[in-house]
Length: 492
Ligand SMILES: [Zn+2]
Image (cartoon, rainbow, N blue to C red; front, side, top):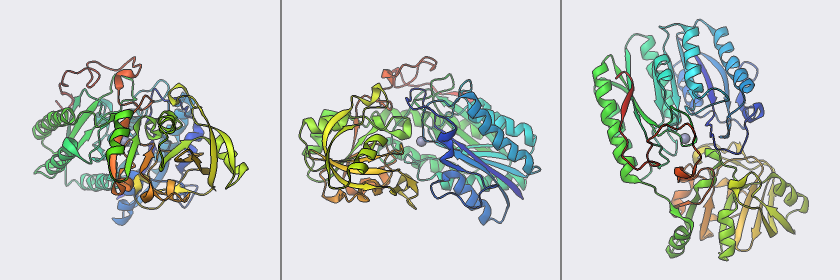
């Protein structure tokens, strides 16, 4: 069997102050036709999981292009045209194939195109014809659309937030495509929209138990796949919202029944979980009251949701309170990192820190900084697992009052302890560790102490009612408090 693999991955936040261009994708792309090896800084995520499985099964693999960018605003129409032409051009050159697998985000939008994944899948379907199996694995923060489902045989989300199962779910899609290509299964899908936007972790509480039920459901008789998409709060367009997609082996009634049951369950679980965050004052008081190390997640400034990564709101409050024995990472401020490198390790300087990307970053802080470390080569591990291959660029650690602040030059959320430890910061000895991340820090940091999610104003605010939506369908929970009413968008 000959299978084509490709990937185009961008979580687009309509409220992000960070623009997206061709260069945003260049840093995290792989063109197997031109480069034999994956560049060391590229993390293939789901594409990697699918590639390993396809090669492991001994399939005739055509590795197509992979391009990913850190979450940010919509790219312009020319960038989109170039990216999609490259992907489709390589697929066209690879034809005929027996199956196509694509690693996509699910919440990619560009200038003039709300549903990029739907557009890609529709154009791939046009190229390969109606009978060639086509499947995609996506981030659970994707926005599922009718267009995606009417083009692909499998639209599958990872189940966990943090997304520690992206590789495994992607490998499973390859298995399903192989089974379909060999006529062993006949996929039939149903999908239900749940008009809600979730940002809740699956590591505890009602959403964790929901995932357990979701997995049990998926392994039931006649079932091929069950996915719960949480939707993306930064997608300001008419398709936005959560969704459940269920694929069965030739049984549309089963697909419909399970999809609706899971949709109700997802809605109830999310309502029961509510917002897991606290306002900053309450969070710092709770941190104070805890005897050991506290990991404080500054969710609002998560670059992984499209934020600038240079908000000063939490740091300013720590300095105002004269908090001691704390550390905070990672402030995206290439100029400050350059200044620290210029001054050198051990030096002291007046430093203007953060607050530069936009109004949601707060004002810059002018501080007395003691340069603890300067590095050019620090890398972190995606989701806190596996090889540390994601560079943070020129970086520095500075002591400001009682807070050791890590400054990076490549905009990223904090995934792994390398961000701190590679600068000589001993996390186990710290009372307070502030990470600019919503949830992907969890695997690496939760073992250190108590996790507290904190909410301040910012691009990745948990208070969605503060965002200037213009095209979001309403009602939408939790902006509108009425419980969401699930409705079929496919196969109903
Ligand atoms: Zn996600």
